[in-house]
Image 1 (cartoon, rainbow, N blue to C red):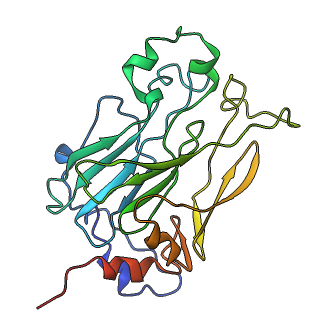
Image 2: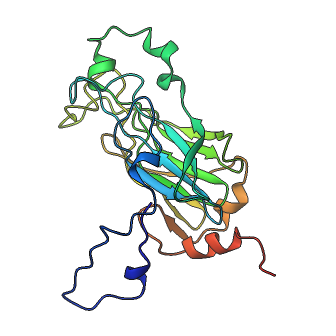
Image 3: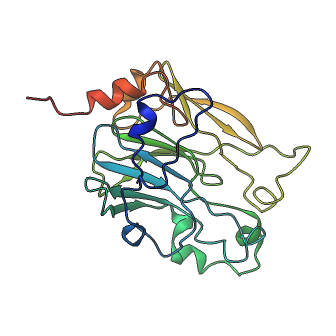
Amino acid sequence: MLDTSAVVGGVADGVVLSLNDDLLTPPENRPTWENANPAHSAVPLPGRPFALVTDEVYGTFTVPSHGCPWGWVRTINVAQPRRPHIVGEYQIRQNTEAFCETLAPDSPTNRLTSFASHNPTLTRNLAFIAWHSGGLQAIDVSGPANPKQAGWFSPEPLTSVATEDPALSRGPNQVVVWSFPVISEGLVYVVDIRNGLYILRYTGKHARQVDAVEFLEGASNLGDAARIDMSARPPQR
């Protein structure tokens, strides 16, 4: 975790600030995990001292040490920035050792597919995550230590496309849900880079939070992000 308060105060044109001495988490205290690939995204749970981290891992075609069980989601308690720690995780079936044991090391699924978490967009109690061949996963994060599936969507792959992604869609599963989900006027927009754009309506738990969103996407703080963050905070006395 890094202290960026110097940036918030405003930076003059042409000035580049160095934050090298503003690290809040000593490197020896950083959370690590067994399949220790670099985390892809780390985003705060609105209004609460927790972060959600996605861990994107490709097949062995890209890096020999990658492949099953690929990467999944972890929730991290960041209330004490000097000592953040993992409190929960969320996997789909393909992220389990039981599934990996069904695959030969050189199988097309292990080499040319990725069932890994990727780009997240969060409401107060939901995380919508593009999960490559795992489709779009909707996760209930109302209990950060026990994230659980609230819904999911996986498209029917097109019979053929002009160009297959060499690392992600040459295996037997040809779903590659990739983009940051965008919520606009209660609908969820997400892109499968092989099969196209999908517009979805979420009807699971906490659906009212989605219905109330005018615009929200995980790659910025535009639209409803600030409102959702503030509405999740307890009232100040």
